[in-house]
Image (cartoon, rainbow, N blue to C red; front, side, top):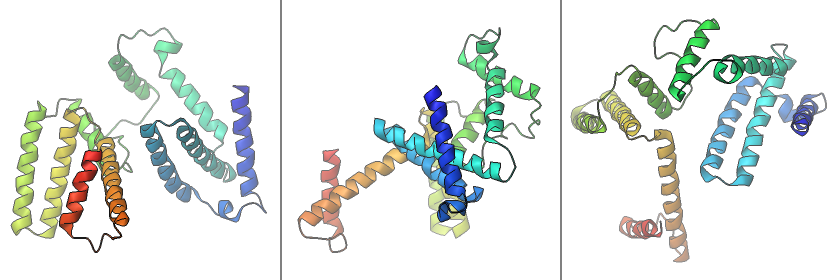
Length: 260
């Protein structure tokens, strides 16, 4: 623990040096808005490391994300908005208060009871009452993830399909409406129907117990791997993608699928 605290302080000293007069010109010009973009980038790189499960990658990407959080806190410290210690003390108190089954004498019998108590404690803390049951889902989430959390929250009050089979019917219905719009609708109508289809697919994913953002990332990686196989195969034959007929690319793509 002492080593961890010392290393965090050393990292903060590095940030101070980077931001000091005569420090790094690039670091000195960064703003919270800039850091927001880097946080998103680092978070998704950490997601990739988690999916990969490779130790060195996890160590590096966890450190990168932690650095950006400390860097952001330092910017606000410089502006006199708050101190890192304020954030740490706030989260320390919050975690103790919201886990009375660990730090006090509250009894719980399941993870679901923990969630229910959590919501009750938030209200006791003076959190503003929600205008809608669906409030609280971050607007900056990727649309696919946001749709997943929106529908999951609606399902918590039983506003949901009864089964995945029912959702599948809805997917086919939305696909038909998209086809109709594609044939005779306006661009805005096509866009709307595409959105409805994607939203239905998120519902189907949730009913199948699959987090859609993770599933799509996996599909992306699979496509990239097979595309790379195709590029390398063509390069070995002295060909480029642009000069290769689609039929030949399809044949190599099928080879890539067999390779896994």
